[in-house]
Image (cartoon, rainbow, N blue to C red; front, top):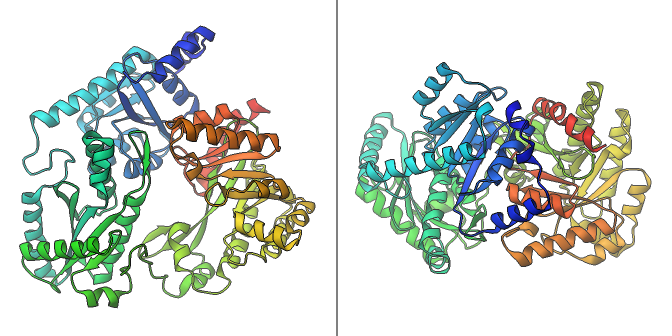
Length: 608
């Protein structure tokens, strides 16, 4: 992409140009296109972003991912109008991304980029289903803008002129006719294999209110987002249909036991409840689920669907945000379906418990980079993952709910300190500089966390690391209790040279007294503190005020879970030091982190 980098008139602007650009960016007349860019080279991405920011016809909301895997994770949880993918990605190529995305049901245009013209590659790309092929060396603002807009228009025209006969026109999911056909075949297969099947009836809670408040266009987009999220959480053998309005139906095949259906419901509840930005608001939805099983409840397709729908209406009548089996006794027997409003299902712990999993080495430490925005400090956050033989890789959001063994969270934290110290020392020997590793304290012992901190410091010193390399992330509640008891834990900890961070500041208490009396090093801004930013002016001003307060107090400011490039740019302008960018740099394995550190060393050196 060297030719792109030789266009200074596109990358540098004067004061007048900046005013014009800002005016264009604020214009409500230009259509908004949400674009996923999968590009491992940061400079190439910045060039693409700069070109698109000057597009006269379109306002692009650009989301960045650096690998095929990260891009596919973004597609699974969010909605995009198009994808722009570099072919020369490390590991899996851009064509691999195209193949997997299309097989998973992504029906929006994907445009492939390459460093040079290659007719053979272009032919392969078209055969794979890409909407267009771009030579990076020939890209400029006009060409890139037109290519994306025309690809989106062609895709929409194709769907309008030749809609699949057995699919829902809005979401592309199966309609009732196709769903019934697949259900009949699934039951025939279940009879032969002596396995089970389930039908889930899903109805969104409060969807009518969204339609009335934001309009039908926003309601349609919401349904499309939910359809994509649900589809990405199901197996290829499962079927999801939209029958009418905000009602979906899911067919699960090859079930070994009723509990398997409950686990799927839990996963689908989680993806529905994940926040989404829509029409200038951040929405958090819930849903009501009804479940009927073959052969326990019925053996005919129509009857199984009717029973699932009736169970869903019972969940709805209980206040929503719940799930019901057709057989109420079965719900109680599984222990997995929450019978009351507001309660959540809890997954069972792995066989032998979490302590045994820790002893057997089934935990692995992943690392979340902190993207440098202002200062050259390079920080990583330790993220534990559990390898479960039945459910795959589980993050803390899932396995922390399984904790039953007393003291397990303390043992987990010490294991994280040991594994993190070993890895930090190994990276430094290879020339990859990391200033500190942040380790969250998940302990339930609010007043005893100082002892854990002392043991963590000792572990780092044993591996030849300065205590300043360890940053402990503590929630607000333990720090409040520390201040109330006048135990002086924070001052004692800092006197030993270690760093301390307030985790998820602004999620609950947001007390200025804590900032006044607690001498911490880092303030981590909760994702909820940035909800609605930058679309909502009042929320944007409030977030900026919190950042400015932290800067005046000399704290290092880190934003948690930044989901969009627009938020990232606002945080950078406001003076935030770093950000955890889920949009481009998710938690990675140790080897993936080493590659990331080497690639970003150049940017860090420019800030020194």
